[in-house]
Length: 262
Length: 210
Image: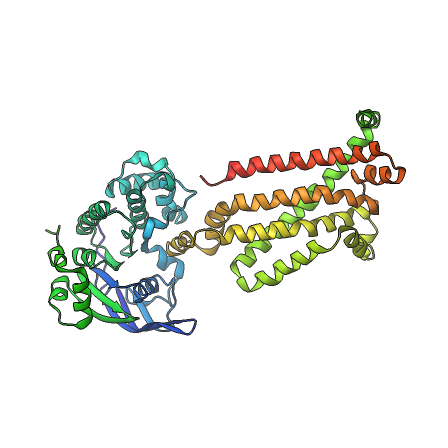
């Protein structure tokens, strides 16, 4: 199941074409053009209100663009079946957004269940995913409020992976965790990504996290894409906004690049 | 102790009127749930309807019950049968707490959870039945609880238009200036209200999300 099936789809997994978004008369996003290649981890970096979460939600159409097109696997995501589109895209948010009235098992197994898998297959899949994210099977009967923050986040990741989506959207998934747990989860994310090669769009405001996890960093400021660079390029860039961001995080940031990668 | 003696002497009638009372409250509450819960769901999802609907339900609540019974008397299909009329009036009164709590319960579901559900590809009806309603159940039930307690009290007034129920004793006692007869209606009504409150409360706690 987990051995990623090579898709015959060519071209970028996600592409933003002249995408703008306005809400209540305010411009949230201006004329965004950006491609996300298959298997890459694109980190959307920026401060609060820069438009990074908006950009993420445009992909699974939780937000509908005012103008422009968001292409997923080569097709505009406004032209395809919305429910199917979303089921093929994993979605992880801060604190996991777990269903408080479902056990861990039911949380993870929900998408397979509504897609009509039989109980045995769901059970096996849930066990497999729990192991994959470093949790023991016994945790499956617990409810989200009985878990630690790190465990909830792991369950959130397992749930997003349940139906083996090609694309994973992660909205500040590790934002609410203590530094040690965050470090663990970042390391596990890298290890997982080496095995699964998902196309990941990851939102964070933390430069260190971006440098560590990204294959490319897209810096956003006030609804505009400033630049999209690899972590190495990012640190060398002379762009004033990039410099500002790097300076704000101080000298230690440079040592974060690709730490934990082989 | 005169009251108890009176009630024992008239136990068949006490029982009969209690059952009538239960019938009025039960049917009207069931109707109010059948109308109120879907209405509450609707206004939780269509915010522009919530003000007019809640205002409407509020206005009904402010009409004095005797006046409402009176207003409904000339209505053709209702006026001819007083228990029908009483059920309609009680249903109208029970709507507000049920609609409001359904609305509040669904709006109270953590927006992050709703967004996660949408993002995972749940359809609107899957979202409603698997996420929103289960998480709102205990709030909705506490609305039902309030509605039942109000109905048990108001149903006593239905006797004024001849719809029966424990109000018969109360009105008769008032006319006879006899405390025993008033209490023979009031005590069972109070017990009914407390019992219903307790039972729905039990259900509410059982269904509360862990």
